[in-house]
Amino acid sequence: MIIRKTERLIIRNWREGDRDLFAEINNDPKVMEFFPFRRDRAAADALFDRNASTIAETGFGFFALALRDGDVPIGFCGLSRTHLAPHLPGGTIEIGWRLAVSYWRKGYATEAALALLDHGFGERNLGEIVSFAVATNARSIAVMRRIGMRPDPSRDFDHPGVPDTHQPLKRHVLYTITADEWRLGAKTPN
Ligand SMILES: CC(C)(COP(=O)(O)OP(=O)(O)OC[C@H]1O[C@@H](n2cnc3c(N)ncnc32)[C@H](O)[C@@H]1OP(=O)(O)O)[C@@H](O)C(=O)NCCC(=O)NCCS
Image (cartoon, rainbow, N blue to C red; front, top):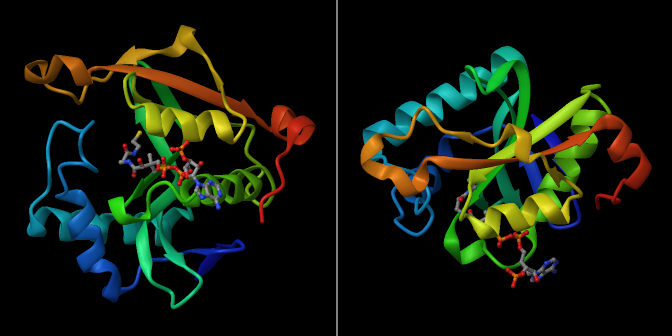
């Protein structure tokens, strides 16, 4: 199923042929710089299966992101249900992205994210979408700012899933955008 098409991209459900790319990005030290662990092939395949079934069951999750030209997979992006007690209560919807390094710095993450905000506040009728990242993950935070999200420092948190052995990765900043803010300042997705 295709969630959205933009000028250069397709946001769609996962296909078997996407597994290699998914495994590659989840084991690339540069892509995973702000995560406490990498995934070997078996772990990446298990996560791939979980992503696909979450999307099938709920319509939310991390979708495949592919170039329109040739339907080449380049990474993922999504609107995901997140529950991270006590910081993010059940019902929180997170927007997120992860691209293979060769597709960075082309505006693809921003283009996909704008389409997802439009999808989330449009078809999915969401009231708020948040995003969060390690406080030093400047590239990801730049995407949040470019799509019109604003920081909400009162909701910054230490990620409970990051082990104490990885202190520099613990502090997360939270950005938010509400449906009203989106409608007032909507940036047109392609
Ligand atoms: C986070 C991530 C997706 C951001 O990628 P990115 O390439 O910086 O972001 P975009 O795809 O929006 O591209 C924006 C850049 O493309 C440039 N660009 C080039 N051509 C462009 C075009 N046609 N349109 C728009 N921007 C363009 C922009 O100027 C900007 O460059 P800059 O970094 O010099 O400012 C990527 O770094 C990543 O996958 N990181 C690893 C995973 C990760 O940390 N995920 C987030 C966890 S919270």
